[in-house]
Length: 90
Image (cartoon, rainbow, N blue to C red; front, side, top):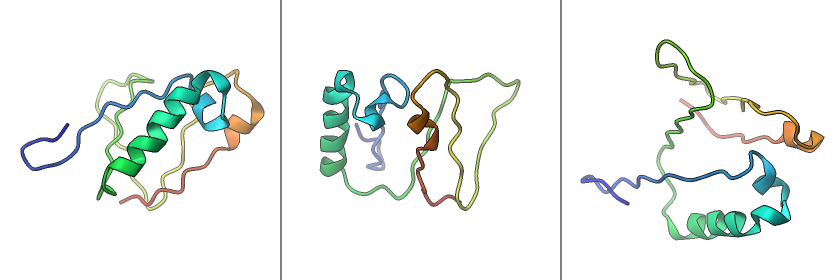
C-alpha cells in the first residue's frame, strides 16, 4: 500500500518470534513471503518499526548509529538470542 507521497506502508507479521529467522519448518511460507516481498519492493530510505511488546506511560524512541536488537522473548533456542541486524540508525 502507498500513501499520497508514494511511501510504502506495510504491516508485516513476524510469526513465532525469531522462528522464521531460524528456518523453522512451520514458518516456511511466511519466510518465503518475506523473501519474495523484499525482492518486489524498492530499497527503503528509512524503516519505522512500531512494537506493541511493552507498555510505557509515554511514547519512547530508540535511535542510535547502530541500534541494538531488543530480545523481548524467552523460551526459544539459544541461537535466537544471538541474531544480529546491523541496520544503520540515525
